Image 1 (cartoon, helix red, strand yellow):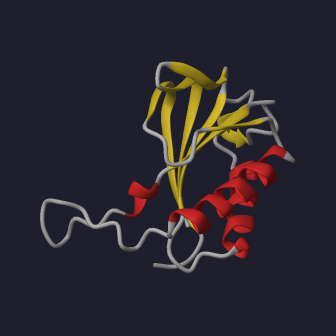
Image 2 (cartoon, helix red, strand yellow):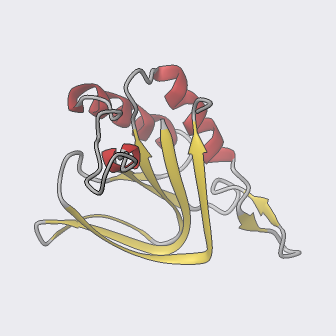
Length: 147
């Protein structure tokens, strides 16, 4: 499982021109599920995201988590995180999990993150428009397993 985590000030997500989700500060998490990923991978990702200290404390040091700052999370499923363009210019997505299983794990991650902080969803499999204001910018790439 792969997550791209971005610290944001404000984020809005639309599908077909309709606003689906919005947060006013916290994290946007783009989540890719790889073939063979299991609930243990999801649990690892959730724990890391909820506790990752990438917000500044009173001394300007990145020492606070999204929970500490009462932030929110917008979690977006993104199979393209497992795109492989090493064989040409058109990426292959054969490493991405099948949609049914990927959605099951994505829904599990949403529910588990929501136990820590308010978590808003994207729409699995939809063509989404996302507007976000990055802070820092701070972007972390997290893997649940060693490459």
